[in-house]
Image 1 (cartoon, rainbow, N blue to C red):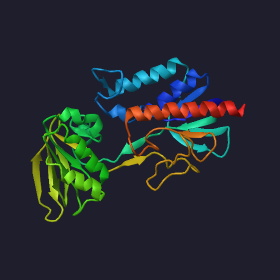
Image 2 (image 1 turned 45 degrees about the horizontal axis):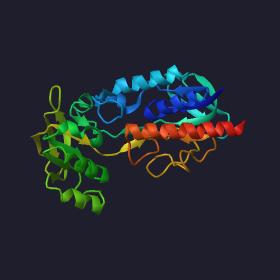
Image 3 (image 1 turned 60 degrees about the vertical axis):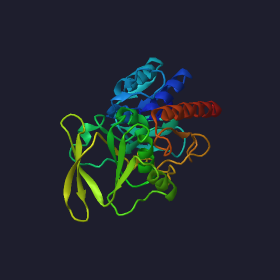
Length: 303
């Protein structure tokens, strides 16, 4: 029997584990076979406080895990399979074993929707990104492209213009899905150009991004264009569908009822699996802290 079971091992889950263990709560982290979240796919992280020279994403996650383990958190590197969230103690199935916990913190994050084209996955962190606030400074005076047509694509492009020489937004349809306000803001920026009815079909370059292949969806003509970076902004998929009875919104993000509480008593949530607004490592860590403090109070109230 654990006081708290944390599902997920990104910044939210690991921060939650640091706080629950320091509160003397017996804590189990269901870390997953690929533990560490999206930061395990990044290279240099320059915007996480405390690292003036930056830090590699995997190194940051490794340090956070070591800190949680130092304070007594137990980790199992297996995937969450199922859970009974009807009442405490909750039963969690992970791998081939079952575990029981008085409180649950869901911190399973969200996965970036990628273009799934040749040259993309192997260049993540080498010119391919999904987070302009994280990586825009690496593209100072460079030429970059943003794939997408919604508000997030416009936001990414606007952030990039603070550093890049030119930003081209490419969208596969004949009109953008973005709100009028966001589109007008992007259109008014002299650094931003637009390509409609087209899509990136391949990302070029041996080690880092040097260009892209673009297909015109009307004529089927394909051309190559040079670029220093590609930012993918076609959405995120929150890892929430495996939690029966937990309320989610129309895009699959877990609904929050007062701070970090879900619709189930004793089940809390933290990070990108509910945060559709910011999606930063530091905000995920903050939500992890908040969820841990709420879980601590809830466990104490049940005694």
